Length: 81
Image (cartoon, rainbow, N blue to C red; front, side, top):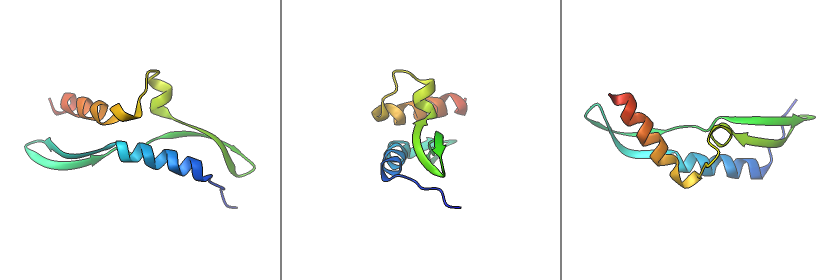
């Protein structure tokens, strides 16, 4: 069996992935690049993805893709303490 993945889903997924890249972040006194892969909830009907939602959108109601880098940076800054 093969899962049919719509092109729109891939576009949305990779757009989120692009915004979640945090290049040149300083972590423990080292420059690193960090990528946070999106976690999605999928609705599948007869082995075809018919609907999806990025978990961050479900947890964060004022979710804005353009602010993802800031969210990641803030969380890492807190974790670094």
